[in-house]
Image 1: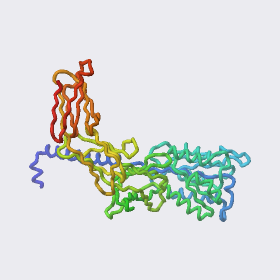
Image 2 (image 1 turned 180 degrees about the vertical axis):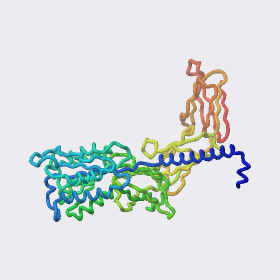
Image 3 (image 1 turned 90 degrees about the vertical axis):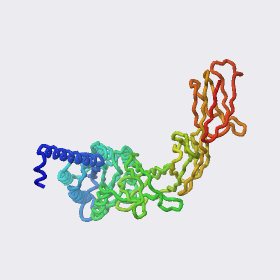
Image 4 (image 1 turned 120 degrees about the vertical axis):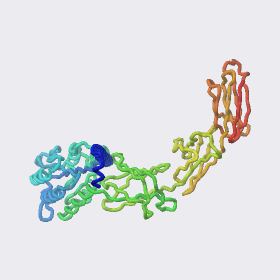
Length: 472
C-alpha cells in the first residue's frame, strides 16, 4: 500500500483527496437541509390561569384552596423544567383589588413566556394573595395577547378556579372565538370544590375536570399537563360493504373543527398484519376528517381520547371504472366527465383506457368524443371493474378547394339531425377524429348572399377508416 502511494504523483493525490472531501461535505449539507425541511416545529406553550379571588381561601382538606393550588402548581412547574419544546407563563386574576370594589379588570400577566422562567413563576405563585372577584371571560380575552405570534405552536390554557363568572362576560363565547381564530386550543378547566351546576357552566368553555380534594387535584393536574404535551394513537377503518376495513391507499386530511386549520395528511396504509396502520393525532383538537376518495368522504366532530387508541370508522367501499376504446385509438388523451346523478358539478375528469377508483354507487358519464357519448346511471360495485366500451373512431378530412365555406356537421340518428360541430370558416382543410355513424354536412360559400345556395353532403364514418370530402 505504501509503495502504491509513493508511485502516485503527489499533486494528483492531493487534488483527488480534496475532491473527495468536498463531495462528502456536500452530501452532509444535502442531508442536513433535507432534515430541516422535513422538521416541523412542535412547540407547546402552556399558560396557567390562576383564580386568586377571595373564595380561594375556602378549605380543601386540611388547608386552603389557594395554598393547595400554589403547592401543586409549583410542583408541576418544577417537573416541566427539563421538558423539551415547552414554554410556560402565568396569568392571575382577582389578586390586586379588594372584593368590595368588584374590579372586573383585575387580571394580569405575572410571568410572560420565555425560556428558563420556571423559578420566576414559582416565586411569583408563592407571593399571590387572593382578594377580589372572579373575572374569567375578561381574563381569557386578555390571555390571547399573552401568546407570542408564531406558527405551528400549540397554545394551551390551563384554568384553575373555584368560582363561575361574576362579571358581565361570557366565558363560553370568548373561548369559542379564540379557538375559531386559531389563537388557542380548547382550554382545560380544573374546578376546585365544585358542584354539578358549576361543571355545566364550564362545559362550553373547555375540557372540564373536578378536583374536590388535594389528591384529586394533584391527579387531575398531572393528567391535564400530560394531555397538553402528548399525542395519542388512532387508526382509520375504511369499510367495505361487508364492514371490513379493507379499503386503503387514499389520502386523509385532518382539520381542526374550531379554527378550520389543516393539521395532518396521512396516506392510508394497510400494515404487514393486514390492519389499518396506526397514526398519531393530537388529542387537544376536535377533528374533521376528509378522506379523498371519489367522491370524498367527510366525518366531523372526531374526538381522540388521550392515552387511548381510537378507532375511526367510515364507509369507503369502492370499485373501479374505465372507458375503453376499441382497436388502435386515434384520440389524443381522450377524457370523460364523471358526475353524480342529478348534479351539475363535475366530480372527476378521467382519461380513457385508465382505471380509477370510485365509491360504490351510480354515476353519469359524458365521454368527450366527437360527437359526445352520454352514459347515465353507470353502476360501480364493490371491488369490481366497470368497463364502458367505445368503438374505434374514424378520420374525417374536409377540404375546401376554391373558397371558404360556412359548414356544420350533423349526426343522423333515427332520422333526426343532431348537431356535432362547426367547421372554422377561415380554414381550408379540416381534420376530425369522429365516431362511426351516419352524418350530414350542411354548407354554404362564404361569399354567397343567397340561402338557396346551401348544400348538403351525406357521408358515413367507419371505425379505423378515413373519409375524405371535398367542397367545390
